[in-house]
Length: 237
Image (tube, rainbow, N blue to C red; front, side, top):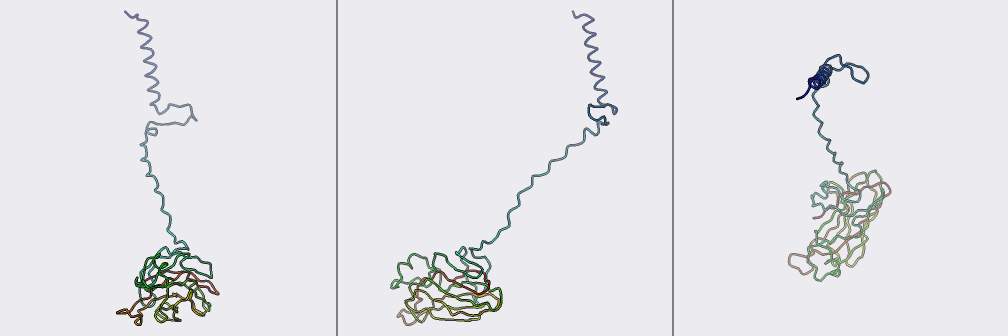
């Protein structure tokens, strides 16, 4: 049997603990901090719901200077299909469309072409290409050249034109059979939107029923200017 003395010690400990609990709940209890009063209501404020994590903001898309844009332009009154990701090298006053690649122009029938091997290497895209550029200031002298040509077999149905937005044909010349490059004479242009158009049209003297579009390749379409110019789209039909 436990002694009365042992029971009395346990009751004393419980009484002291109860007193501490009562004191902590009191408005006058002082902690070990700066001595300021803290009420139960202040210590039991509801916990705020944590804010949702911020989602990363997607970067604004930009158009690199060495690719074409996605804007449809009208050249010669025809809205053409845009070929994106055409290599374009440029400085402020020179643009070269195509890089080390070439463009196959024609109707896909070239079994007798003088450039058959090269034509086979590049898939057919269409009979008309427009290489667009913008002149930024009036009285800008522009020189236009196509530095690579192969497979022109007809001298009277393939042309290179300088077009202005709104279907104005400013310059035109034939691409003669057997040439390795072509171009247009230098011209002074006002501020505006322009395109070099290379086209293969039907040749009715070739002995083909309904005519035949010459198949040939062009590459390194170059525009040089006396003032700043910028590249536009490469369109094909």
